[in-house]
Amino acid sequence: EVQLVESGGGLVQPGRSLRLSCAASGFNFDDYAMHWVRQVPGKGLEWVSGISWSSTALGYADSVKGRFTISRDNAKNSLYLQMSSLRSEDMALYFCAKDRGAVAGGWGFDLWGQGTLVTVSS
Amino acid sequence: SSELTQPPSVSVSPGQTASITCSGDELGDLYASWYQLRPGQSPVLIIYQDRKRPSGIPERFSGSSSGNTATLTISGTQATDEADYYCQAWGSSTSYVFGTGTKVTVL
Image 1 (tube, rainbow over the protein chains, first blue to last red):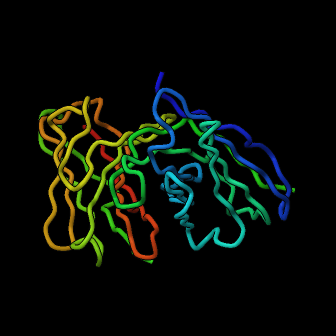
Image 2 (image 1 turned 45 degrees about the vertical axis):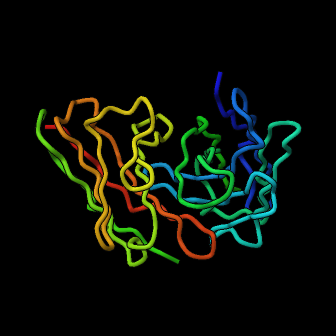
């Protein structure tokens, strides 16, 4: 089955770290760029970060630059998001999404996971 | 960074046509994608590269682009089309931006 399954969300205190994972199956993971997108409950979608198929091109939203690190392990068909110095405004549902292309280029995200919820609170 | 502006809401009667615009200064040079987001579900890509439809997306969904505005059109709107819709473009500095979102209500 073609799917993306996120994990790693949970309750974390402000200033602490959390690592999200996304397990891919049913397609050639190493052929495509991958992304993290978040949605604050009741609010809109926000692109967080993206990584090319070969990990040579990385991108981050200004809101997370310097605090979040995206990575992937093509041998494990997995995508990761290391989040540090978490803030209350990072609290959201985090989606993993597959790009239609191998690198960034506005091709669209054609497969999404169900999301993992990150709660930042003391 | 780029900003993409959408109307907050659009209302449409069943069987009629709904149009959602997405405006941004850099859209004229970029491809737009469109996503449907129903409550409690994950986003679904319904249009990419301005006007192309992924397999499985009904023909009543169509996209177009002119100047700095992209438009999603839903023809023969059905009750199941009630959802939030977001445009998206690949902006400067190798980053993506989503539009502000439009809630479509089928009256």
